[in-house]
Amino acid sequence: MKVICNRGALLEAISVAGNAVASRTPKPVLQCLKVTAADDKLTIAATDLEVAIRYSDAQVQIEQPGETLLPADKFRDIVRESIDDTLAIEVVDNVANIRGQDSHFKIFTQKAADFPPVPDFEGEADFTITGGTLKQLIGQTLFAAAKESTRYAFNGILVVAKGKKVNLVATDGRRLASAKADLVSDKLSKEGATAIIPAKAMTMIDKLIDDPEEAVGFQIRENQVIFHTSSATLTSNLVEGQFPPYEDVIPKDTDKKMTASTADFLSAIRRAALLTTEESKGVRLTFTKKGLVLQSRSPESGEATINFPCKFEGTDVEIGFNPSFLVDALKVVDTDEITLELTAPNRPGLVRAGAGFTYVIMPVNLQ
Image (cartoon, rainbow, N blue to C red; front, side, top):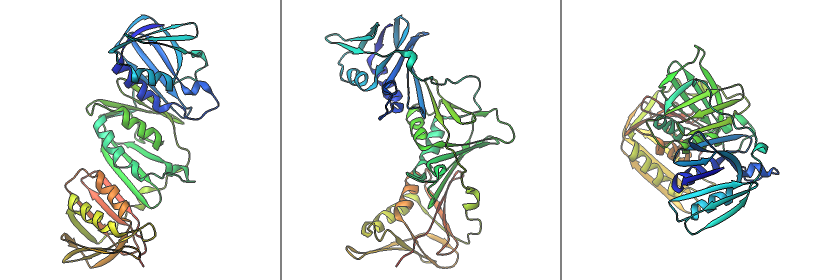
């Protein structure tokens, strides 16, 4: 194999594919990048056996096609620290020679045949969505997925594609975020498609998207999902288990509603949260026709009271919420105005923003 690469494009390809390199593994090949020169492009692939990425770089001159395995960390460091606009890579036997204008590195390689197969995107997508829309949906749900949970389904994001729409849902048992949007196209049956995709894979696909107008294709198989853009393909195992019936969690009988500026409400919550602690992680919200009063109290720090003017419909109510959970949702809202719907102090609150974002938050007990 012998190629001449644009260093910037090569570094991007290494960085993207490197997200799937196994950090700890007894298998040395999983700490390598598979580099393939063929069909006028350089393809870099990586996998940790749960997630796999292949990324294509077209800014390359192929003088001799071929493939090899290079240690991901050393390869990345050499390319990143280089001061050259282009780098020449030549593999002879089990040694890769990487040359710049004033540098020459020799790296020992491994056999490409020992690398696990990385699935490719074949045929038509089950459905497609624009990159910008998918990034928005991921941003509005990923934060609510459980970081660690014995209920594995909570560690992923539920994707439901049906009727020209796609819905992403995430929950950690104390809150639930749901975001909907239109599909660009689909080849789905009337039943649609459903999958629980690991949060790790969703984070990676979010990083892969750099053009908001580019279509991202999905293929959902029995135990895998494959994402595809013009330059990258990401494959991930699906999360096993049953996702909770999320539609049953969304309150249907709310009779109280606050309407307020998103930015102003976010500011009020953040200020009220200043005098909370890990032990007293709650803000009291008192709604009346006059508006909203936010209060927090900490035995070690003191008390805070914020008077927040807003539109409120319904009977007076007092309820406690974890301010961090409210802040997380308000930060990802893309509308100037939100609504908070309530039923009772011991019932979940419901935040709505625009036509697509819904957020359910459980109340907390206040002493």
